Image 1 (cartoon, rainbow, N blue to C red):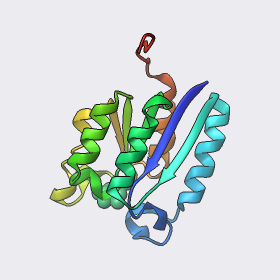
Image 2 (image 1 turned 135 degrees about the vertical axis):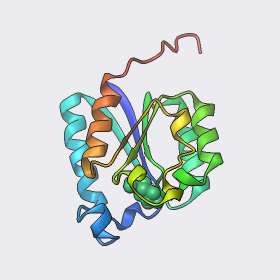
Image 3 (image 1 turned 90 degrees about the vertical axis):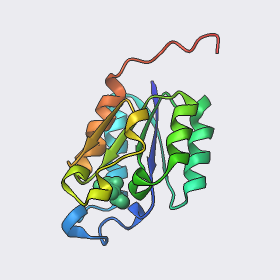
Image 4 (image 1 turned 120 degrees about the vertical axis):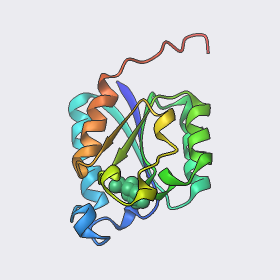
Length: 150
Ligand code: DQA
């Protein structure tokens, strides 16, 4: 059973009411429900955390290092600003998949740079809630390093 942590960054708790023209009408609860349904089909043990706080996201990443085999993260606005989240990901050595609902490369210039991409195994961007579901499929398919002896 693969252990996967899903991390949602700031303002994603407001999905559904937040800029529906950009992010659609889906709520975070609906996304999490679909993730849980897919996880059950893929035999994935899933933990899901949302936080609006950079330090809390860093601590959640750190605390996941002994449990999670794969991390799926939508760092939201911190994608474009947070060296701390990037460093946390590169420190913990857990393969991490970056997710965005919108296609960040088709938006404002400041959204087109990600601090997270260089330390992620890959990125899914632009498919709305399906970005998360595609990332979960990737989380099941990617090979894991042998961590025996660590
Ligand atoms: C986002 C894109 C970010 O630029 C933005 O700050 C978000 C959401 C997305 O999922 O499309 O909050 O990560």
